[in-house]
Image 1 (cartoon, rainbow, N blue to C red):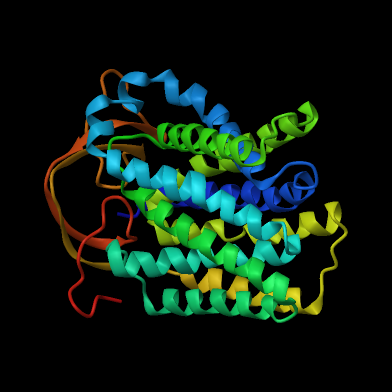
Image 2 (cartoon, rainbow, N blue to C red):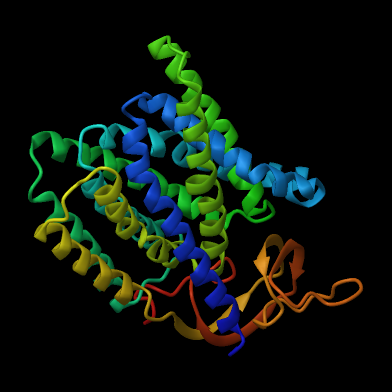
Length: 357
């Protein structure tokens, strides 16, 4: 299984890139909130995500929008849209409206905590002892950055925490969708969630006459920081599991705080530096290793990013074999073996009452 490292390395790069793009969205969104209301901005950001993912999602309609797969996963897709495309962005922007961008950037890592907790309780994601310590340090980093907040800031923190729970649910549902590609999932979440929030803003506020430059900027931000970022995150989480994918995504506050300092002239205080250090330690400990034991794979058929070097993908392609990472519908035969693994799309099995390290 040594070749598995190639796919994991690629998944790590995808996760870090996703965090970079999403992290920069926080300070830029703070700027846009001076001219756009949270409903409109949330809608435009996710419509931008739909625009970014549309070309690739529709390039292979037969596999990316397979009707049987959509029917099989419809309940998961409804949850992804509701929690990830509607509630998450609205709660985030509501919190961002009442707190500093740098604080929000760090609070957003409560998404890691929510993802890990939900994974351990509901989604068969095994977390090692070092991983659990890493999650604990992530929580502590959020506590440290909250120490300097006033009542309004702490109230904003509650909104951010609820947004993180929403996205935690979204993360797990996204990681276990089988038969719908990451581009198709991003497109559906962006289109439906974005249209809903945009319509909600028009109905509640009765305003649709926003400056076209603000609209264009919000759509462009959504294309990069939500569309491309979400697609990269999905590919990473399907290869490493939702919790590990979220750990890599957790670099986003570093870029968010840097952007806040440059774009918004927010000071980088000693409290923020201390929170940074705790967060960095938490990310490092959470991503140290997977675990290994004998396990069985049942026969299945699904679609996700993969290569043919990991021992799990032995199907044959017509013509020349695919040597690089690619995505298409493929089948797996039943298999039993033992190796070090993460709780990715292929390794969501029970570990008994006590689990395994």
